[in-house]
Every structure is written in C-alpha cells, then in structure tokens.
Amino acid sequence: MSSSSLPTSDAKAEKARSYYIFSTALTAAISGFLLGYDGSILGAAILYLRDHFHLSPQMMGFVMGSAVIGCIVGPFTGGWFCDRFGREKTMIGAAFLLAVGGFATAIASSVAVFVIFRIVCGFALGVSAIASPMYIAEVAPPRIRGKLGLTFQLAIVVGSAAAPLVAYPMALHLPAETAWRSMIASQLVMLIPLIYFLFQLPPSPRWLADRGRFEEALVVLRKVHEPLLAERELVEIKAAVNEEEGGWAELFQPGIRFALVIGLLLAFFNNWTGWSAMGGYITNLVEMSGVTSHSTAILQFAFTYVAMTIMTIVSMWLVDRVGRRPLWIFASFLMAAVTLATGLVFHFHLHGPVVLLVLILCTVPHGIALGGLPWLMMSELFPNRLRAKAVALTTTFLFVVIFSCGQLFPILVQISTDRIGSAAGVFWLFTFICLLAALFGFTIMPETKGRTLEDISNSLKRD
Image 1 (tube, rainbow, N blue to C red):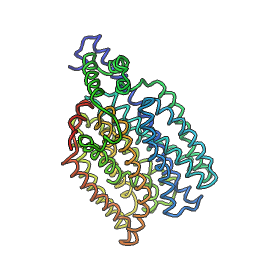
Image 2: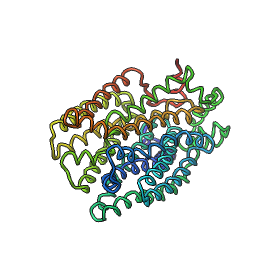
Image 3: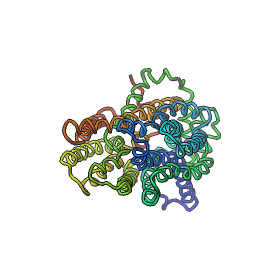
Image 4: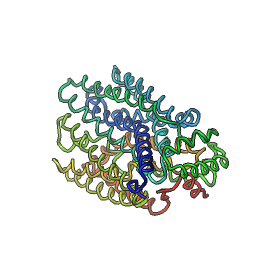
C-alpha cells in the first residue's frame, strides 16, 4: 500500500518515519564525505606537494598512500570502540581526532611531519569507515537498506567532488605553498557540522540489543519501522544475540569463513577494478594527456567526481529494485570495456577532450556498483555479535588494497611506459581484473536485497 492510500494519521506516521530514517542515514554518512574529501583534496594538492617537497614517483606514491597506513590500523581499534561504546560515539571520537591531524598536516614544515599526521588522519578515517556503514546497515529497514547503505558511498563521492571545486579557486589565486596548505586545512571547516550532527544520532538498535537493552532497541526500531515489523525484527535480533558467541577465532570457523571470503573479495574488487587505483592520480593522468595548468587539471578532476556523484544516485535508485548481483555483474563487464578503451586512448597518445571522456566513463560502473556495493554488503554479511570484528577485518583489508593501489599505480604506469611506450598496460590489467569480478558475481556473490541482516548471515553459514 502506498503512503498516499493510507489513512491520514498513518500517512503522516509513514512520512515521519521516512524522514527520520533518511536523515539518520545521511547524518551517519557524513563520515564518508570526509573520507572522500580528504583523499580528493590531497589528489588536488599532490602536484604542489610534488614540486614543494621534490617528490620522486615512489615518494609521491607513499605520500598519497600515507593516510591509508592509519586507515589500516583504524578499523581494528574502531571495531573495539564500536562494540564497547557504540557506533555513533565511535564516529564522534574519530571526527575530533581528524581535526587534530588535519590541522597539523596543514602546517607541516617537512614531508616527514606531513606523512606522520596524514597517518593520524587516516587512523581517524579508518575508525569512521567501519562505524558509519555498520551503523547505517543496523538501523535501516531491509526494504530500503541498499539505498540507505549507499548513502555512505554517495557521501564519499560528494566529498571527492567538493574537494577539487574548493581547491580550484585556491589554485587560481593563491601562491603555490599557500594554495596547498589552504587546500589541506579546508577539511577543518567540514568537521564543524559533522560533529554537531553526529551528536544527534541514536544508538544502533542491534548494539543496544547486544547489551540486553531491548526496550531501548525497540524504541529506535519503531522510529524506522511500522510497529509490528519493529517487534518482529526485535524477535529475530534477540534470537541471534542468544545464539551467538562473538570472538575473533570464530570468523575463521566453518559457518562464517565463507562470508568472510566474500567480504574480502568485495574489498579487493572495490579497488583493483580501476577507479580507486587511478582516482587519486587523475590530475597526473590529465597532465599526461597534455594539460599543463595545475588549475585546469584540478577542474577536470572535479568533473570526474561530479559524474561519479550522478552515477551513485542512479545506483541508489536501482539497488533495491534490481538487486546487488545484477548491478555488480553489469558494472564489471562495463568497467572491463571502459578500461580497455582507456588503455587504447593512452596507448595511442590521444590528447584533448577524449582523455577526460574516458576518465569520466570509468566513473560510471564504479558509481553504479563497484564502488558502493562493497561498503554496503560488508556490513550485511555477518551475524550481529561478530559484525564489528568481521567488518573491522574486511575494512582493514580494503584499506590494505587501497594502499597497494596508491603505491603501485605510479610505479605500474612507469613500468608500462618503459615497456610499451604508454600507460595503457595498467588499464588493461584492470580489464582482466574486472572480468574476474564478473565471474565472482556469477558464482559466489550473494543477493541481499530485501532481507534482514539475521536472515542473510544465517544463509551464509556454510563451510
């Protein structure tokens, strides 16, 4: 029954519930905005950092990936904080730590100091990257959990798009050193509304239930469900809490390790299918196409993330209609075709708008599925009392893979250029990995559309 056919009082209640759950999910997803903004603002500033600190290709890769070192450590600590203090309090603590690291990075006097505090920023972002998607998955009703879960990815790409737009006027009007320091410091402004809104979030109902606070959990569930559905879901949550024993060793035991393998593969394909590896180096790729102006490269960088934002919104509309698996398979094949074409563009040294076009096309499959679905599904796969530990492990692996991308992409570009005279070989490597991602989608990737978290985790309990 649509809300328009409900009695007036029920329609108002449904409207209030919809507003509440969407505003709650968007608030939790603001952490994703900062994750995207932080990485993207460094992508805009990296040309200045390269010149200011005289960075080699290897050192530039390390600077780009330094925050990910902290991100790798962050989820394990974040998992403990999520279990001990709650998901929303963990996000608040991470935001305060990010403010400290961001300020110190902006005033860094050497590349060593810069890298140290980039690691601090990364730690804070790693903590929030486990807490935010998990919180959204645990609060969202099953019928729209896909749409709400993708708000985290939407926040990432909106942050990624906003950063170069903020950086562009700085690149035009400020001296080089002032420009990059201002770019890095700009994230501090974003933290003020984040911290304020995070304080408005209620605790996760599943976290409350795990601590035996069932009445409080029911209060939160009733805000996002119809009353009968809220009580029914609480019964499932209680049963799951009573059955399970949470422990690290259990993640590798029969019944759970299959879900863990799926989570790890999602994390791998999220990054090595193309966009995540090249995204931080868009300004460099644009320069390779013949653009010599830093400000123009930054503006074209922004265009690619605006395209990504649009495709993520399309994904939010599709994910609860067509399902996770069809979107993943379609996007994998599409990205294989696009990276193949991108390789040809670079191999034949084409210049001009065609370079920006193929880079924008790379955002389409990533925005539709390859970027957002791993963040969503890693929080859907595991039982309640193991979820924080399992998501800590898969998120840590995701950041390890991100770090490998940041380190290896400029090196692989150099190797490809030395061997075949262009960067094309790297894009053709992505093509092969995309075909593996499609095979994963056809074989072991589960469909989680419209199912409760407890039903999903129970269905994956196999050897």
